[in-house]
Image (tube, rainbow, N blue to C red):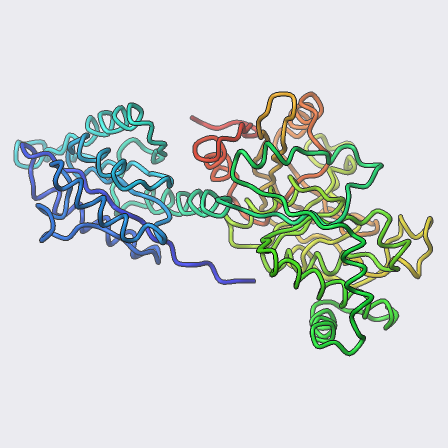
Length: 475
């Protein structure tokens, strides 16, 4: 898995002249310390560039905006810190003039009940409302901390900063995203229909390639091709392949090498692949291991050309920095109303399993023969906290909409085939009714992390998606 990149935040320190200036100075220092403690970088005016390194006047707002423009390519989000009331115009002017369209977090530092004199009172509690009112007027999208006021040195802000980093990674990762659609949607799966045009209006482009082109490139590739041999070695080091024919392994390697090259040539970041049952019938393997390897490297790949499915996987992976899987909401688990079996054939990333081995696809094998279905990654999904998400295009209304929430995979006994696990979701029956009544797909993306609140915030606040949070948000 790739290492999580360092986050960079533009910081606007609010200040208002008739409030204690020393609070702006120490507040700036506290915010920089909090950001650096989180392993991130702060882009902020120095005390030489403005009074206390804060923003109050229009000239200071211009200087702050120019600084942000200079670092525009690297700034992931903006943090507005209000160590005193702050000048609402300076704050919003700095953001507007920068031209940045990134998430904004508004933080206000609390007063101390025993320090409410003219020399120490902050009034940030009130100033935050004024700043937010101006952002609304200016059309600036923004997020709020959990508590109305919280110190940069507090545990609450540390948690909020981690959440905000997740929001920022999602928003930035989906900007100008290119998704590869490899092959046509299987005719039996109307459920994975989607609108390229709706995705395009949100800055997400689809790059299609016919499966015949992939297979044609494979036919031109020699068995000794360097890329194919490198991929073959990677497959064997990734998963146990005992009992799998060498011929099938080489086919998988060529398939993976061709897809890798095509994605690099077309600047595609993630993919969705046709499987059922064209590859098995006309090529003789399933693509599951190749897709599993990509997903394990934080390059999600979904089956059945489920483009919104791989988009949902990517949102979770961006937020958490860990691999996502695409699963079926597949079976009830006995009579337990809040548990179900999540399953796929499977192309789940290795990260999801207790133990994993390569095998054949038992469902399709009954139709096309076992020898044509090697390449699945099978095993039991490990236990742990998880988040799930599903976002899709709604063609009737012209929107992207979806749902997300927290849950967990359990160690409950389960004997079955493929890649499967028992999931426990609070108020699962309510969620299942929502999925069915709203007409969502049976596919859901999952990730071993607690990032569902960041998924929801990024969706409704910055991506322009409609989002339902299950079971409900406190605020």
